[in-house]
Image (cartoon, rainbow, N blue to C red; front, side):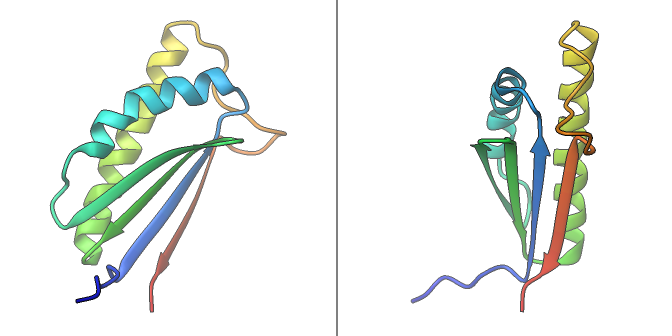
Length: 106
């Protein structure tokens, strides 16, 4: 039996501009990514430019809930780093700190 791909997928790329910030985010988000979110599955990996979060969901409602959850954790993690004096936040070559690509699989 082959595994069906979920009909909804999203990739969120966080361009941190600093390896240390990427490591902090990975440590903060890894336990959350390992948790089960209803009707959704998430993977987290570090990339040369930052962090990539991939979400697959069975329906639009599950995708919305999962993205709201994970983006909230990202915002909280970045705010914590900022409050702790971790710098001005993630910036990479003048681009916004996060880029999200959301697509519906066919």
